[in-house]
Length: 380
Ligand code: PMP
Ligand code: GLN
Image (cartoon, rainbow, N blue to C red):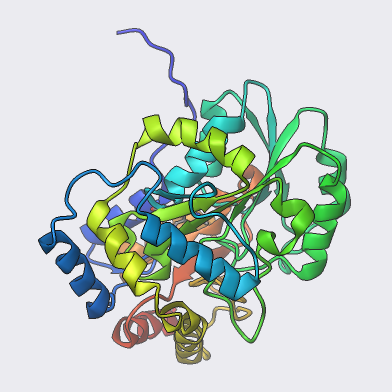
């Protein structure tokens, strides 16, 4: 049968490849970003109650209003920023659908979208499916700084969107206040939409502050925020997240959303609305994950890997150049098969597959898993 692939160069995602290989070889899986500990039994009980109470049919198209109100309240509390629950917040099937829907709603053939690499893997294919073109800007290794003059030079009349992701997966770096000010300055008086993927907003360490795009009024009026309850509340399998933005942009978002998914898991939304009533459920997350990071890094302190403690996210990158000079993809596969531990090679996210001999490890794991991982890593 003859057909023309819309994504001829896309292969299976690295997360699926590494997780499947880990399973096949019974290796410890620190590759794909998901927790191996149980989520809060209180939240599980709330979902169960919502099902028993009959919330099992289609949820409203934009999401359950109680949940949208709770999200608006969280924005007020954390950033003193307001979004209308009725018009500016939509519940989505994880951040992945939110990102896809924003891109589908605004990117036309030949539009250009600037992304910062290493970049999360769903941005590029989503842009290309719409006939758009990704312009990657590589963060400067190893400090992950941004060359803003290069960003400025990369903006053309075709630039329709800039995707930012702070805290950033996979590097664990964050945009500083001055990065945000530069972004504001160079996009001021343009119609460039900013897609700010903030799924790791609650995982930021050492007292650093998350610079949400909603804190910058000039940016906020042209920006979408995407977020993930899977990441925030340790339930990546529930597939619930949200998107928010100014009303005029959300109107276009909703046009696509209603035919893309229509609506999202109903009982989980009811439960999350209740759970969000307690701000401690998200306010305690930075400390919780910082403790995990520190536990993991203390356990591998004497290993032959070199590293700088990650600033944010639940990923730590480790430089293995004093252990091997193999390509990172080959080394990562060998670690699964021969050493029994899975990670993600960073080059797959980089512009031109730049290989800095670094691997990404997810530390959203029990202490027991982290100790087992350290035992393996310390022997290399
Ligand atoms: N953006 C980034 C940066 C991610 O790491 C992920 C994976 N959690 C997503 C978006 C997708 O989130 P979700 O699982 O809620 O679809
Ligand atoms: N966000 C997860 C990660 O970075 C993966 C999610 C996925 O597999 N799509 O590991």
